[in-house]
Length: 418
Image 1 (cartoon, rainbow, N blue to C red):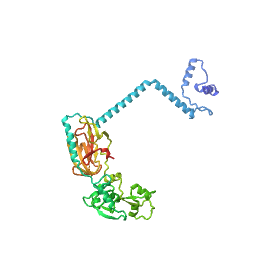
Image 2: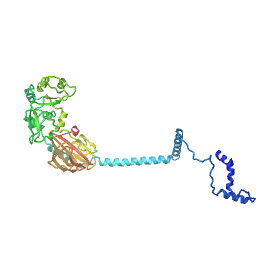
Image 3: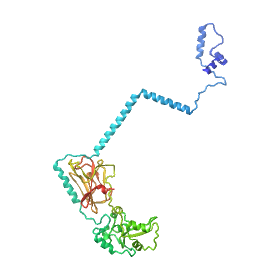
Image 4: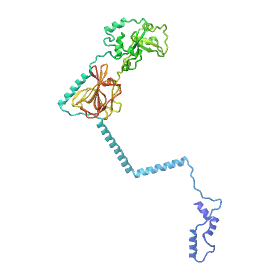
């Protein structure tokens, strides 16, 4: 307002009136005068303000105060908007949330039905098929006698028995250990070679030859055969003869004699032969390939455990012979451990099934397949695809029924799965 007043009151403003009329003489006719004055107001005039006065855009410098002021205005506007349209906003939010929960429920229900095995109603006479198949499985799970026990001792030479005591006490560990070479022949087994050279524990050959998996033992492979039972031990930093002797429960004098040690000083990385010692059961199982893998690598749900349960087929309390893994139809089924496929087929209870003999008394059954991929009589490696998940036989949804036998008797699959 001050700028406008200044312009209006200034001499320059008054003189500018000359430009708004065609002549400086006021005419007597008031009407003509006002007409001319009015037309002059709308006549373009080439007027340039004199130096010293210019019009420019006002700039507001950015500051924290102005920033907070702007934010405050935004918040106030948001509050006003929310108050004005609160009901509409609330209704929209609740509608979206309800739609999300409904969609999630439908998806989860569909997924559950697809991957669920529930109770079935069948005729009483059909339940006899279950017993028939279980008897069939027992006969297919060949009653092979183990060639060695869980500690690696050859059958009949179990540690602590009279026979084993007679053999071990007759061996003198006073002489240095010696080695001879042996070339593996077709049909050889680790236990057979162990027996052939008068040794009593298979862990001796496994340790001395650093065998990762005896199932991969091949004809033509060369082995070192020690003169005594025992294992190879690599000295670690901080080890002493006393600590090694105590940990492996062996005689100190025998350790010194067998390894021809003249000093008790040990060096990290030094290898010693521990006479009479054997691998722990975990290391032995790893070397023997006795660790089963879960036969489903994709996402699945444990739907029924091994043991007593309400039978999903008969609807009564019964003993479940395996464990069930629910997953979509077509999910690949893998061989839990390497072995020979000894049976494939179909029956009313287990539908399409595959049975694998893994040796050393182990057999596995894979049931309710939608498709069998494995071929009877063929050798399969651990992890080989043998079929696809389905819902054949007595089943209310796609899943794998997995049973493990050891020496002709069913065991809990969870006890061998890693």
